[in-house]
Length: 432
Figure 1: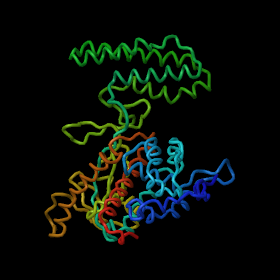
Figure 2 (figure 1 turned 135 degrees about the vertical axis):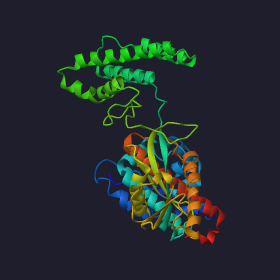
Figure 3 (figure 1 turned 45 degrees about the vertical axis):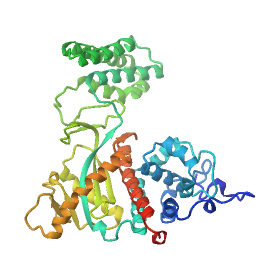
Figure 4 (figure 1 turned 120 degrees about the horizontal axis):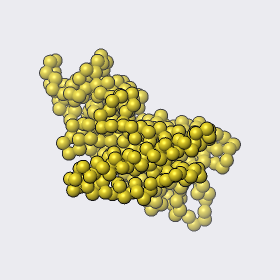
């Protein structure tokens, strides 16, 4: 059903003081609440609800405010809801007229809200954070014309993938599903698989690689036996074949894949529950391989305000991602970038518009362009802050859509932190 436009606690209670009268109106969060366009949020997301079905939904301002706070302060869904109860300024930002002592929502409702709005809705939230930055003068109106672009890796919340662990995980997932649907297997190998995985790790740690490979081969044998047993028992049973189809395909690919990827059309799998995870090598000495998805980041050159943060699946070359990143920055900021400054990984981008300057360029470089090329390095600490202070270092959201939404919301959280820092240092008269 259509969400409530006002919280449930709007009814006047005798002797109860309103939250706006208790807090400091010059506090940075109180000033931020006055510059975000909440009416635009309700108009945009209100159309995603169906009228006349079930009970009224949670106010949209509450859900959006919780997501801003979550990614600005690097919290989980459960943590942001619990801390919301303790902080009157957070409650004021989310539109509560009176202080509440109970949880505003169940944390699982944040997952359902993200699924409802999708990556496009998260991009709209990023655009509103840019508008709030313009309203508070944290970013200048001319800044979106000159941008810095770079890529990083958003890792997925998976264990480091080894062949032995993948065999064990795939077999355990098949056995778990078989128990759920009531399919009796000839043998589950639960005890033997757990022991073989433990011995594989011990032998590998002791550098007894021949024995470790023997245990790995044993785990692969167990997986193959379970796959064939399930195929025999589900043959001709349409409903069971449909239930096992996706998981069997994943298990077969893990069972058949080798260290060398022979067919580029079928990339290697590095996780059972997240088959979309990719192995990306960025040339880092301390971390040669990262497992997740490549993310393109676009920031203003002057204030390092995030204008774009998009997931780029499919192992793309950096130069081929530049157009997609700049298009998102234009949608978010409402202004087409005129100049883009990138590193040498973007050679061969083949873009005529806007003007793209690559680090190390010599021909046609004026003094102003040279300063902007040096300023390009400012995007590196932005990515570092988004990874350490935000939630870009490890994504816990599901699927490719989760990769896209988490990356965009990380950009919005970075902008909120920039605005709060600006409001804390600026006089109260400068707020819009």
